[in-house]
Image (cartoon, rainbow, N blue to C red):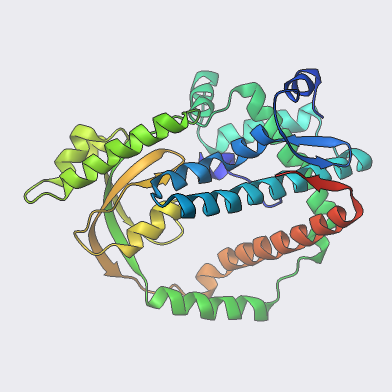
Length: 322
């Protein structure tokens, strides 16, 4: 799901009902004549805010929350400004384009029927209508990026060789990790109290897993709520760039045989155990050249998009209230 539900490159009107809701929802920002509400910012920031639940220092948690909320608000402001440009330039997405994109998503993910598609969407907090709305906006923004930014993005052979040198240096000191995990699932619409209850459950499982003589694989079979439970939570060997960042950071930090504190991802709370680490060979330049080119284009595109949004912001009337 990650590859098609995650945000694409870019900085990602209120209807009558939303306007009425504004009577009781605090205004977070006014962008020209559009309003961004506090609840919109909190919804955007929700995954990051959930990860802060484990921070027990109230001052640090408050400071981190402020940073996360500002980042989420800046993202929403950028999206509002881009949406204005999309309307002015007539870069909307037709129904035919949208349906073709949905069909492509299903094909890439081997989804054969609507029931399976609905189930997968539900697991990420979408239904068909809200996912199509999300996808339409993403596609419109990509059209704007293509028009305003893509022509500036160029990757030379020298860029690629420099990137490979850095890549080879990192990979030569890296390793593959063989890990297992126990997952305590958290619903996408879970309340803060439900998130905290799941975290407490995961903490107890981590403590149990560290007890002498406890078989982590057996504990995962009995307690994990993830699809790998039947395999004892076995994730096999993996390298950097495969798992979600929060999960990966912990997996590559732990020593062999160590069990982590609970790690929050969009799926819930994970307790990891590293079974083994082993060195890996660095692939040849030609083998990873295309991957490096894609990565560099992505990085440069993000940079130019940020510059473009800043230009739009300088010309706009933006008033922040949080």
